[in-house]
Image 1 (cartoon, helix red, strand yellow):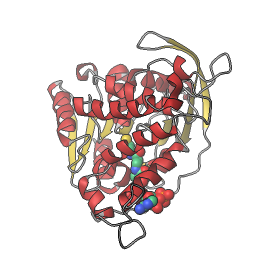
Image 2: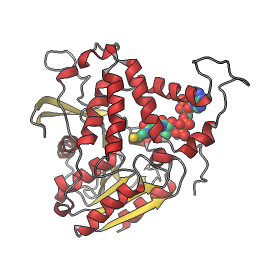
Image 3: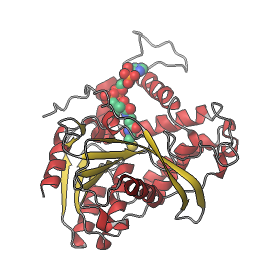
Length: 355
Ligand code: COA
């Protein structure tokens, strides 16, 4: 079992070439049409007709599930690539190879402000087309954390005959006012940056200041107060006494800026807007339309997607006559626990697969 310490060794990703598939044009839930949609995806393992698991990533993830969910996906991991055929795609609206606001539209210019509003349902529709392309008619499971959990939920009611189990970790069926509020402050930070230009910034000239503030704000919600305290307490960054200025004084400030800088290298500001909007709109699945079994996991220290939200979704699933399990895990990492914990979350996943 993982010691409830706060520092966890990461694994490198497991080799799998990133591929792309053209999905043609998609009519979106909000009424617009996107032409020439591409999804980037990766697969691991061999398909035997019954063993496909779709892994759905969180807000800023990508198709390399063995990298960002290294504790859960890989050789001998709970989502075992030696046993299952594992598929993961970058979401519609993302910026890691799938069609999103930074992709080129028909006029060879980035979509920018022309990129339409998308929903969690649209992300799932695109994934269903990817599965058609791969010849996968039915999933043994769909699994994901945070925004990935919302996609897993949506799969169960949008395509009830295509999914046997949904594993939903550190997630919610719908955002609370506070979750929407955090996302809105992040969006405002991006949109108030003069370099945002209404969404039509040139590649490499985006609203970095706004996006880094949005990420620092987001990062606050990923950790628990205990995790911040254990990592940094009030320690100063590389000095014994304060310098009395507004530059970096505390370790935690340096950490947030470092994490924001790393994020800027891999993420697009308009994707941040479009994807946070999509999850704010999400209203949850219709459990009565679903036939899948559910496995919910929540973490006691996750205050942004609290256990009460998973408990509520679990209760709604049961009330609709579905089979559902809910495991509450006591680890101190906060929301990021679903990325860091393979052991206890893995047990819950294995239990769901055995049922
Ligand atoms: N100043 C600058 N950098 C610092 C620092 C300081 N005082 N203290 C630590 N760091 C750096 C470390 O050098 C390390 O850098 P590296 O990743 O380039 O090696 C990094 O911070 C360690 O980050 P930490 O958060 O402590 O690692 P972790 O193992 O606890 O967590 C992740 C790993 C991947 C979960 C976490 O780093 C992360 O990215 N969290 C956000 C993930 C996310 O998007 N979650 C939301 C899903 S909705």
